[in-house]
Amino acid sequence: MADTKTLGESLRLHGVSRRGFLKFCTATASMMALPPTMVPAIAAALEKAKRPSVIWLSFQECTGCTESLTRSHAPTVENLIFDHISLDYHHTLQVAAGDAAEAAREEAMHENEGEYLLVVDGSIPEGNAGYSTIAGISNLQMLEESAKGAAAIIAVGTCAAFGGLHKAEPNPTGAVAVSDIIKDKPIINVSGCPPIPVVITGVLAHFLTFGTIPELDEYGRPMVFYGQSIHDRCYRRPFYDKGLFAETFDDEGAKKGWCLYKLGCKGPMTYNACATAKWNQGASWPVESGHGCLGCSEPDFWDAGGFYNALSIPTSDVSKLVTVGVAAGVALGAATAGLNHKTKSNAAKNHGTVTVDDLEKTS
Amino acid sequence: MTVLDNIKIVVEPAVISELTENTLPLLHEIRHALIRLAESGESTILDLQAIPFGPGDEDRLLSFLGTGEVSATVNALGETKIFETQYPAVWLVEHKNPELSRVALQIEVTQVPTILMTQNADILDSIALIGETLEQSNAEF
Image (cartoon, rainbow over all chains, first blue to last red; front, top):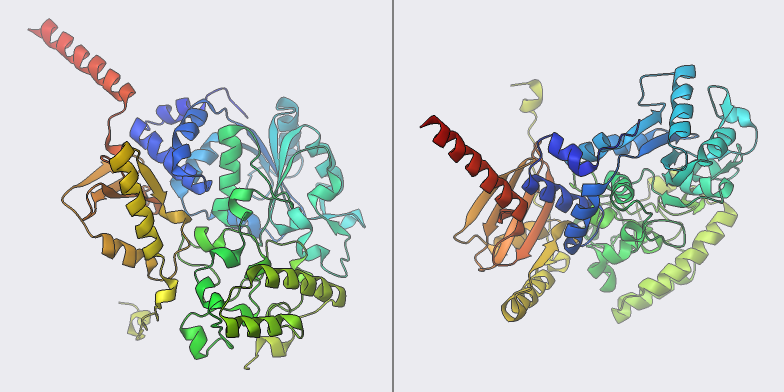
């Protein structure tokens, strides 16, 4: 349960020196994608930060988001942060089960009324409640009763943020996002399938540090992580600008690291931090590994057509425009992004699917 | 040796193109930061983890910056390595956690990186500590 120690007191109790604290703040600023000039402000805020209670609800999900979180790549920083939050309910991670677990949730809600942070992963079935229940309680009921006393809600993963896989046509469970149900609480959408670990912890760190929610984009996502498109931050972008594209996954262009746009990369319409935060301890990310972005942090990405052809190997205007771009040697980022959104919406209407041919495509 | 060690692995070097180059714009930024430092004394910190490096970019940058005549190690919440590059006032600061994973990599354009400087609160603690030691010594002798 939440205690009265500040983070500064807690760190000193653990023998962390002032240089160690400065380093912790530097790493936290980097994790929150804030400029290094913010370090003194972070240090001042963290010094006074109180230990918040966190209730984590998992609904229709695959546990990928929790897996992502528990494999965060800066363990010291995350450990210090997680040592300092009181994770009072997470039915995948906690030891208690059944009635004892539910009692812990109710106790945390009661003791921290109006102050606890509610984290949700997974979508909520609005159809037959029997599709997903916990201790006999429907997801919808559990979300509504847990949200009432929350200070804010973090919807972790594309399922909680936008409905995700379950919401894909024909959406048999009637899956919806947290924001479709809860309208009277601040909601931070941390989308991605799964979200980048450091983005999850960065948002938690922001709340812990400043006690507020970060600036959000039109989809409720933190601007510091989702403010720029994958395409604009991609190290392959100069190849796009010069009209140099890989045509297959094993041609000369692919070997030379050219742009994957024509192989279905959704980078131009996807907003996320993969290009800078990267994955697996910062080792790489999908585009660096030779595969286009799937657009997993965007709403309804499962219905946006085949991963390998729907947006980027279009049957219409986009290829013509790209050809013009190749000839002219100019960037068409904004224009193609607009066309991509149109293509995406058409693909959603037609419910494009991936075929074996897509996967084995050789030309 | 396990049976897996018998499998020959040939690593093909990545094809690097000048187009993935992030070094040049960063060097311009460092130059501007040096001018600011010289003219107004204002320090600059660049967080390299916020730069969209492609394969080989970081190595190229570090190789270009080289190493200068000062280096230091701070042991606090894991190891932090600091060294001045061959360009005076341009420092590279790499923070690692106790598991040796990197938690931050920064270029500081300054006279002395912040983490090396003793904080005022530590100076006050130091005065108190040495005072206690002297009192104990006086009592004993």
